[in-house]
Amino acid sequence: MTTQALTDPFRWQCVYVAEHSVEAHIICGLLSQAGIQTQLTGAALYGAMGEIPFTELQIRILVYAIKLPRAQQILLNYHQQLQTHWHCPSCQEENGPAFDYCWSCETQKE
Ligand SMILES: [Zn+2]
Image (cartoon, helix red, strand yellow):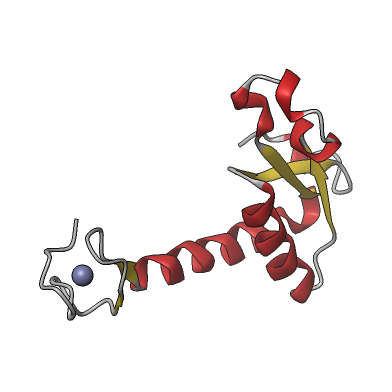
């Protein structure tokens, strides 16, 4: 993280780099629910995917610097939530956080 947030509270800061537009929109939804305005940047948004290296397809999610700590907290919660459930690598069943083995096919959690 940079320290630019201290100098300009309304500078756009990147809070997260999403792997794809679906994830970007989930995260924007979470942030806007919390009243945080977001802006997306990334080549993937412009529809020229065939001509752009894969690494540039990532989408940056920007928030005002003044909202950055709050946005980071929301993203932390989001990731913790993702970790509480896991999908079986073998049968794709969803398993709760308390299970180390798939309830359906008994494959061990990765
Ligand atoms: Zn399974």
